[in-house]
Image (tube, rainbow, N blue to C red; front, side, top):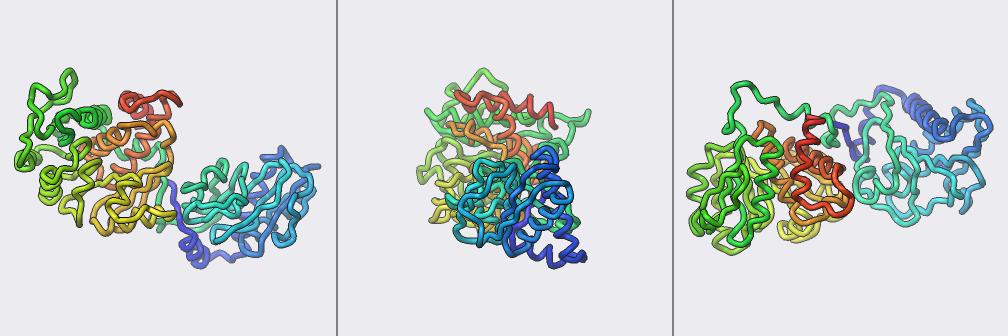
Length: 444
């Protein structure tokens, strides 16, 4: 996992470094110059314009300018306060105007069609939230130091950064509490099945759906199986057994329309994880049964869809809640806001549960304030039912031994990565289910 630190955390890391500030600036300058030389194909005869501010970011840019001169480049440095509206013709612009601590509106000079290399973060992009005004730098590429910053992966940040190169300049980021999930984290997190393994060792119980609403529970159940659950039992309150989905490996059970939590709680101890909510409806009787399950479940829970409407306080069991922005607003009374990290963390602390806040960058937060980020999802997931698939994957990973936080983070990454194997247009949630095994086989 790649460490991510907030601008304030980065300031403290800089201050705590045993290395002199000048040494760190020189290392950063070397890294920027190296990347710049790669972008323009060498130094001699190349024209580079550096726009530099007065802080550390500007110092990094000026150090890069000196290094580029030594490599034969013709470099002009403009102070950000005196830069022209349109920069002179050049082969590359190095943006070192403002760093991650910048707040406000910045209108960058026109690069005149030249590629732009941003130092640490494109100037004008908020280092914490990724918010950016229309005048913020749109970089071709970005070099950042020690750790990623939230603004590089949240909000408009990914649209403004281009590919991001993370460079180690000798700063200690081992105490980072935010991390970006990577492909290898799936393989490192999923245990291999032993010879003695059997289906009940990774069994998942799905309590979802209602008569006439069978699509969501089927997607959850199939996704759990495809993500490695050894056995999936599906109970739909109020649905007669002959009306349960058939023709798959999912084992159906008929649950009563009332007092179904009693039966679920009696049997749930045999399972390693329980999914509750998708397609259940929000009738008061249903929500009352969900509240009982949330309070008394002896096994970890994935709380999704309609079950989120039953959450009204701290949960009694280990749980993952999976709200999208609208569901988050119903839980809290207000939308997540620009600082999605704070939004997910504050809700997780209030509910004593892991919160997976869905979005282009999915934020997963623990009650203790740790956070994971997943950036693999794209527009292919903007179709009905993909959230149900994600819930099944989370449950399968929990059933295979992951704690709730890691299961949610790795599942979000795998879910988005699998979807990227499918077509850009026309993909449906069921396709994502079938793409899970190929991706997991290649990476886990």
